[in-house]
Each structure stands twice: as structure tokens, then as C-alpha cells.
Amino acid sequence: MQARTVKISFQGAAGPIDCVLDIPMGTPRGWALVLHPHPLHGGARENKIVTTIARACVQSGLVAVRPNFRGVGESAGEFDKAVGETADMLHLAEQFEKAYPDEAAGKWVLAGFSFGTSVAAQVYSQRLEQAGKIPDALLLAGSAVDRFKFRDIHVPADTFLVHGEIDEVVPLTEAMEFAREHALPMVVVPDASHFFHGKLIILRQLIEQRLAAV
Image (cartoon, rainbow, N blue to C red; front, top):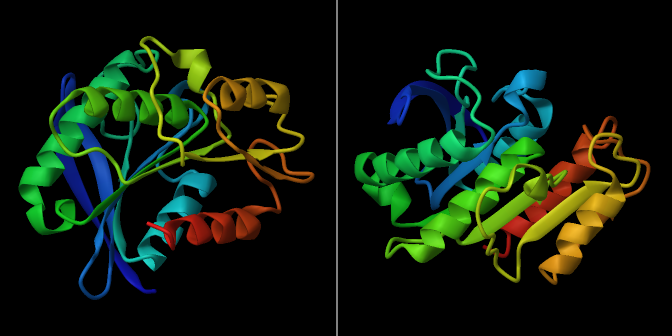
């Protein structure tokens, strides 16, 4: 599916949140918030796994929102170990719902890669405690949720976990501990590294299959 990309800014607790929207042609059926890896290790919204997930979301008819976390690109602030980043994404979600009510009334997919999984899981947990809408799907690739956890985590039983067999950043055993703690199944891609080198097509297919059920 073809898409157009537009730049937009939302307002976070530390100032502007630098974002792009990947907008599918035709009428969107909802939106996706796709969160990037560790800002202090080169993580940004242009990350290949983030863009792969975003393309899968667009293919599924969702507007994909790709923000830069604090201190990345034109986003204000400094790295805050997921605490400030989670607050910022909660602000972003509220602002998106007001600015794009038609898209926000549809399906909402929340996705993250690596550090972004921790922010995503904590955003989901916070929204679960509020009266507002919660995401219809939570997608976590290369899960590092517990490394940056600052609150209790509550994730849905149908959370989609995908991990590389030979992940050199977040070992498979660590991801399995998270999956076991939350009673979640996990898809393991054979011979895939943390960044899914040479496996992005497989990753995209897996994401598209999950989105087909949303």
C-alpha cells in the first residue's frame, strides 16, 4: 500500500516531540504508535525495524506515528531512562486523539523495538489504569521491557512478542523470562540477531499476520 509521510510535532513534558506520520492512501482504519530503540545508542525513528513495523502498519491501513524520543532529532529534553519517555508518549496519544478523532476512533496498535518495548509496555499499563481507550494490540520486538521498568507492568494476553534466536543485545533467555512472567507465547526467528539482519522480510510478514487479526 502506498503512503505519504508528513512531519508533525506534538508537545511532551520536556517540550516538542519530533514525529512523522506515515499515512496510507484511502481511509485509514486506525493508527499505530511505533517506538524506537535506545536514544543513547543511535536509536531513532529511522531505525530499520521501526520503519519495517511502520510499513506493515500502513499496509494494514493504519496511520503510523514514528516519534523521536527526548534528545533525538528535534525532540526536546534528555534521555530519562523510560520515565520521561513514557510520560511523553502518553501526552502524544492524548493529543493525537484530539487532533485526529477519526483515526483515533478506529483500531490502535502500540509497538516498540528494544528500549521502545519498555516504553510501550509502560504506556499500555498506564492507559489500562485510566478511563481512556487502551491499544487494541501490543507488539514488542526484541523485548527489553524489564531493563527500563519503573512501574508494575500489565500487558494483554495476546501481546505479540518476537525475538531473534541469537540476539546479542537482549539474550533470548532474558526475553523468555519476561514471556514466562506474563504467560505470553513468543515467536523466535531462527538465526536472527537483535537487529534482525537479513530477517526484516520475515519480521514484516509476522507483523502483518498479527495485524490481520486486529
